[in-house]
Every structure is written in C-alpha cells, then in structure tokens.
Image (cartoon, rainbow, N blue to C red; front, top):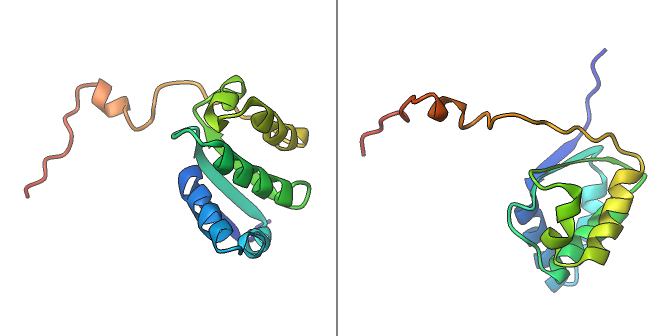
Length: 130
C-alpha cells in the first residue's frame, strides 16, 4: 500500500535561519503554523554548526509546536550527550530532547561515511575541466 504525505526537509542551519528571519519580522507563529501542515519534517545535520541560545530557543519552539502532532526526523553525527554543547545550553538541549525522545525510534547508523568510501579506496575524484 502506498501512502502519500506532504513533507519538508532542510538542514538545521537553514531551518534556524528561516525561524530567526520570521522572528525578527514578528511572524514566527505564522511560519510555525505553516510548518505544522507537513505530515513529515526532516531536520538534517543537527550539530553541524553550533547554535546560540536564541537559535536553540527557536528550534525548541518548532519542536514544541510539532510535538505529538506530526512526525519529525532529525539527523545528526552528534550523540545526545553532545547536544548541550551543540545547543549552547544544556537545559535547552534537555527540553528539546525530552520532546524528541518521548515517542521516538532512535536509529543509530555506524560505519564508514558513504561519501568517503571511494576516496579511502584510492579512487581519485572525477576530473573536471574549468
């Protein structure tokens, strides 16, 4: 059986930039409502760049808004123990993780980087003329 749903995907950095932009315009609630229409949201690369306290608060608001209403997938190379450092605030990280982990399935993928596997075998990158 095939199920179709509306989904949204963005890196954590781009997502937080959008949240910050609308917050500065006093339109954050409008953006949060628009994100709630998606059955599935994928937030990629949590922890790729650290967030400051304000950015973590904006992410918390998004997580809280979607909590127990819609499905959200988070990807990260950071362990949950490192999220306090990533979020710039251990209390904020705990609040975010509390909501994320409440009804979740954690999938921990271990192994070599898929993107780097050919490089490690000695395969040169493709040559491109400029």
